[in-house]
Image (cartoon, one colour):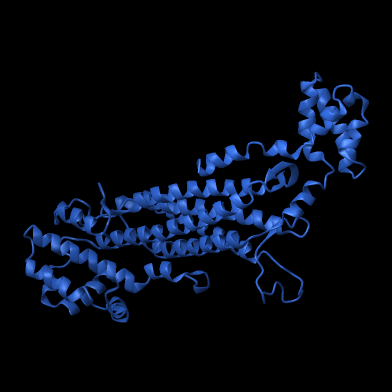
Amino acid sequence: MIPRYSRPEMAAIWSPESRFRIWFEIEAHATSALAEIGVVPKEAADKVWEKGRDAVFDVARIDAIEAVTKHDVIAFLTHLAEIVGPEARFVHQGMTSSDVLDTCLNVQLTQAADILIADLDRLLAALKRRAFEHKLTPTIGRSHGIHAEPVTFGLKLAQAYAEFSRNRERLVAARKEIATCAISGAVGTFANIDPRVEEYVAEKMGLAAEPVSTQVIPRDRHAMFFAVLGVIASSMERLAIEVRHLQRTEVLEAEEFFSEGQKGSSAMPHKRNPVLTENITGLARMVRGYVVPALENVALWHERDISHSSVERMIGPDATVTLDFALARMTGVIDKLLIYPEQMQKNLDRLGGLVHSQRVLLALTQGGTSREDAYRLVQRNAMPVWRGEGDFLTLLKADAEVTAVLKPEQIEDCFDLGYHLKHVDTIFRRVFGEA
């Protein structure tokens, strides 16, 4: 995790202190469950909680033990025994390391998902507010980067809102899928530990019991989780690229907020660069980069190995921390985005009315002209305008073949901007609901 792109709440989930605290809770709950079914003394389970509940686990001490044992869970259990005393011999009864590691990872991922869902809620709120603010602000819709037909800026933001709403649903589903617990022993058969222990720990940790594990929780769950993070990152990049495009000097329909005292370039004092959305674009690449290792973790040797472990120790923190930071940054960009309706109108008018070409084409066909001839007539008048040689409406009115089909007022009616906006309310209702 890079501090520059980390936020404290998400980073804290992945700290050694948090990890060891979760490990303790898993072990302590398992010991309590064993006591309930009479496998270990209840006094021993109570002592584990009494000594460990408020203990501060010494990360340096655990690291020092691991340097000798070469095993992180054993190092933790050794340190826990130093804290708890003789009753620690009842901890980890019938369990294997993956019971602790996998359950802990899933606790951390569900905690991370909760933060990311809240991040998405804040981004959605910003998108909705700005979408309604510019619901009827006309702007040019582009295809292939070229002026196409009029839309509204609110519709652009509504589209992003709908996309991130889908992403929120995906993340909620991914959270549910990842929230499982395995306390099933060395090969997942519960040979040395009762399944009731797993059910008890799962309930206490806010998870569901894994239906069947091989010692290792199936990694298709994790692959799905990280794939959803990658999709969210891609959606952010799509929105970031649109903002970057809109901020180009030749476009300048919107731009990132530029604060007092901010500097855009070390060399050119006039520069106002889209640095935030460029940063989001880069961070999105990183989050997507963690998806392939997660997919490759699904296939383990002979049902169980730990080749996934080193991967997840890296991608778990990095993917969630990076996405959390990027979502917060995107929310700030949208919330403070500077929007220029006058420039949008100016760009709408740049092509001399060509954005209404389809309307003319349809009017001609409805007037009895074949589609092929109508297309030829419209394109014949459009190309000079494209080259800067006149005004589209004027040329159409001067074309005898066009006026033989359409009266001047019918041609003029084809240039009504409001025609393109008549269903904005319908789209907004679909996206945001009746309210």
